[in-house]
Length: 487
Image (tube, rainbow, N blue to C red; front, side, top):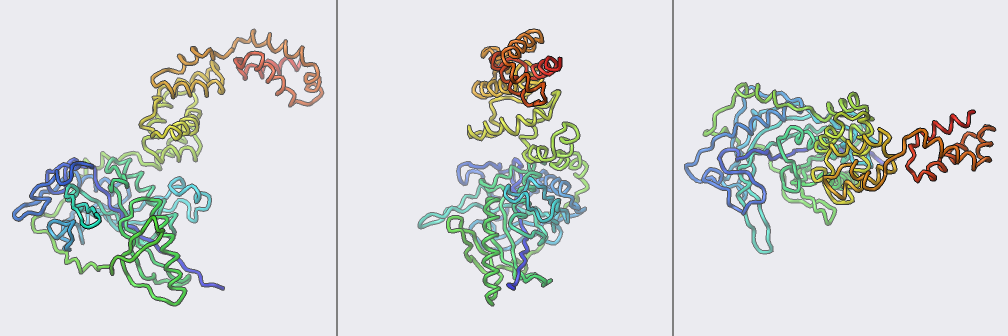
């Protein structure tokens, strides 16, 4: 029997905080600005310049720690991490080493955070991936590699950057995908980062090793550097696990190294032998005093939001939506906010959820729009569902009204229904007259129904709806037919 191998994964996630200014100077943090337009002597590391801490960055990092169940240190300090690279203007990075701001905690892995094709085969439902620490540092500059030269944009240098380090507690590429999806949701809920991976606001280094099943000691750790898509992390880890397993099972040895992922080739490639911590020659930054977090923690605790898991539970208990639908709604902060506005005061908020998750999401996808660009305001969708629930239009007519609302932003469901002549007939007397016509014209299905073939009533319902040109209230039609056929 072939030897089985176990993969072990740990992730280091770098998160740019959405502060207005940089970590140690007053330069603005703005994505997409003219290169090298937001710099000063401090973030350029010029001699004699002195850093001053950004208190809001400290608060946002502590808030992240509270959201993830970390212990926020009473005292933390900043250190100098020394290395020489074009993107680091001082030739050292101000970071945190032995006294980080947050310790412990974990990231929950809800079902909806997994890729869709893996949601029915989750190995450990409701798993929480343990964290080692969260520390705060400054980001480096951005390098642009051209055909024969390299350009450096120092606008990003000095941006407040959290590093969230997990334990080697992730067992598969699918769990890594779920971890990053869940973490991104929580960061957005806390309003601490835009977490846009395409803009480099959330980046990930993956540490992965394999070992034979039954072996307690972890295998040789290999790092995949600077991943910038969640799906790319999944693909890179799947490739790297297969590559490492092939080497080890074939009798070869792995060397601790840093590799890069080439999306187009679908492979990882070696970059360099991995540095160890002592290579960085950490020492306390002499220009920055230790931080006592008690000074700002009361303010931070007030900012802890309702988290995705809490929102899922509330949607189920307060609005009666299914666990699955609650998970889908809560997985996107903007979508959940849209739904709450649309469901406010609704007689049947569960029906509002169905419209949001089915018709609205489908229309937005077809139009290439996000929920923030939705042409139907939440209150207007509430109005549409209200018309249907009040029996003023049918569900089928509701689809037509919805299409009109989506194509004409700002118009109400009532206006469009009236314009299209889609008022549903709910007058019992008028419906009884139509039912009498249908029963008289169709003696055979009437006789079949009375003989016990109850499905025949569906044919009769269809004839009533046809004769009323689809305007008869189907609920009243069903009640009238059942009453008359029982006579």
